[in-house]
View 1 (cartoon, rainbow over the protein chains, first blue to last red):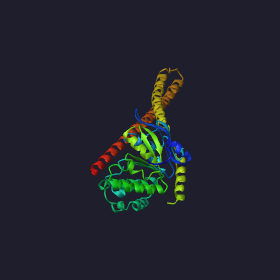
View 2: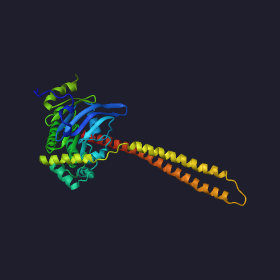
View 3: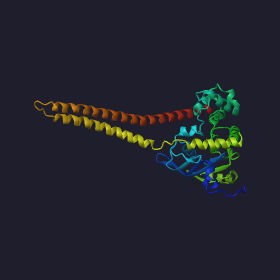
View 4: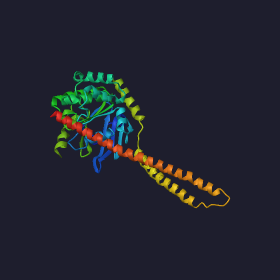
Length: 249
Length: 125
């Protein structure tokens, strides 16, 4: 158990707004008549890795959909780089550096590795540059550049999804359930890469159901329950809160 | 990447987000244009029919061609009414189709995503 000071009740209390790559203020969002986000407050300061943890159905992935512009906000405000981006188109946000790696990888299984990387040229970066960046970080993908993405292992597919995202030089990276369906060793390797990316100055918001996978690399942790961030603080301070969050109060 | 480089990227990110144009209220504008299309369609037909009704009241005067001139002036008015109606029709069709195709595209994207997820899940098994 850590001796760290008690975590602030909300994420807003922890950081000054001007230092934030991302900030959510009282964000509500719904699928039709079902309200999933019930007033989310969250901050991701520049160059920080923030994890959003919690049991299934808490609204974590929905929060990422709202941040990336795929789901409209019904109330509250989403600030990216200090600007309210409510109503911004997802492609506009992606072009300017907000990059989402969705749950289930989001690659094209019937295209080769090279062709999948080709799809990332929409941001204006040339295929040559994208390949250089991707294969330098993931040499295994370089060896399999002509192989169909659908025939890669789960870990390699996730590497491809990450390579495609990182090659576009993101400023804010949103990772949704990176560990989904992967062996613990592979997950560990992938999060080592995430830690490297964070060291290069990219602000990262990680959504995870399996908390242990990310606690070692994050700066702050938010626990999300029933559409709200109920706790926010350092990983050590939050570790004890996690079992309560998952098993009930 | 050095700290300076990452600070530069953060500054660049701020600048890019700041200059982003937000397309808010587009849906409302589309609905207004669709409604305008309906109004023009109906208004054009009313104008053309009005011109026709008015032309029926033109009475012939012996030794004068004023009645013919009056009658002739209703023809371009009726044609203008039809043109307005057709323009309104196109406007209505354009924004109705845009809305329909947007939903269709969303549906296609959703189906494709589900199919990819299923294919990936089959492969993982």
